[in-house]
Amino acid sequence: MQPDETITVEDAVQVLAMVGDLSMGLPPDHSIRTARLAARLAEENGDGADACTSTRLVALLRWSGSTATAAGFAHLLGDDVRGRHAMVTRTLSGHAGLTFANVMPLAQMQCEVAGDIAVLLGLPGDVENSLRHLFGSHHRGDMQDVLFAPNIPRAVFYVRLAGDLEVLAPAHGTDGALRLIGERAGVKYPATLVQRLSPHAQDWLNMLEEPSCAANYPGHDRRVPLSIVADVIELKLPWLTGYSRRVAALARRSASLAGMMALEESPLVRAALLHGIGKVAIPNVVWERPGKLDADDWDQVRKVPFWTARAGTQIPAIQNEATLASFMYERLDGSGYFRKARGEALGMQERLLGAAAAFVSLCSPRPWRPAHGEAAASTLMTAQAAAGRFDRQAVEAVLAAARGAEKPRPVRDRLLSDRELEVLRHITQGETSREAARAMRITPASVRMHVDNIFQKLESGSRPAATLKALARGLI
Image 1 (cartoon, rainbow, N blue to C red):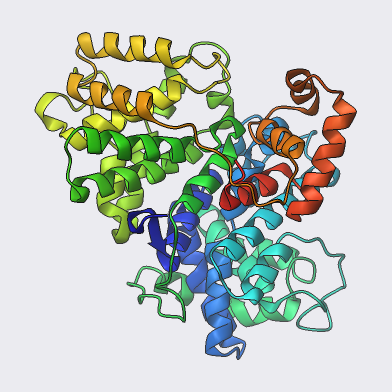
Image 2: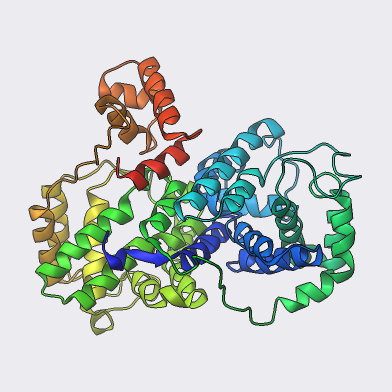
């Protein structure tokens, strides 16, 4: 891992907070606002500075595992983004397919992935533990007489309550939000905690409009791999797994061949790893469309680079890279999006990044088409350059880099057998056990047996969690 492929823990948390908000259909600053409310609530309840800091981190990462459950909620609700927004704002009308039995496994998966993210970021154990308990269920009466239920971290209740106030107030007004919160007092959070919040609710909501202080906790400036952000984003669509990593690697090699200096190369790599932020705001039904996109679909897809650029305005530490990433889908002839930039408006960095991303995409399978071979992809890219959509020099550098690249080999850390690694590569691309069995010429029962072994060795309870850990370990 090179220095330009890292990010501070705090900046990673901020990016993942926004990713979670967009994935849930919430405003991109929802988790930031919730974190301020939750920390204020913890302070009001007499918690010390360390506990308030942990509560803030839990609130920021509350929805970080939501990309892992996008497919499941798309199956239940049709639109995973708007559907989940309606769920949390309590504006979802009767939905026959939505039951406790089919929602709880998704909630548990989301908690598992969020907890794993905390581990990857090296956050304190109480943050991880709280994230793993965020969406548990309770029976009425469990919390009527005591402030906190046993075995559930205090931060869980602070974040649940603060999150509900922040998301319900815009939809129902402060009084309406408190009424809805009161209906879940003693079920979702202690009734006594609701009583402590109520007198301050409006003042604390008003306080959210004031500038917040910079985070300053032990380890906030420690560097972690930027690829963590890319990997979490791509849990939304299994067939995207590893895509940003491959674009970043190709962009680095292409930049060198194009004669770029290291100072020009570094932003390219970082932009490639961050470019997918906006993808999480688009419903899975659009990305999974087997045929051509209609006009409404394209209206949504064109918002992808807009949301990526927006991330840069919200998180100053990634502003330059996010801006560069937001040009990934622009084309020299003005046929790209979302700015419809053309010609001289696109520098060599933008041109090279766009060409690298397009080539990697062509070589990758998508729901609407199989992967192109490298020769076919090269022919298509050359034709696009001749037609004036891509820069010829950029395409030549990308194709030369692709031809000279060695095939990456998964790290052999002896955790998994060769057969288990093969199964892992199939299931992390979204294949079912039957599809993996057909490709590997073994039985579906054998695949399921290997999956069980993989989960046990990786200490994972779901495919998204296994995917995230496997990427972090270099197994895929």
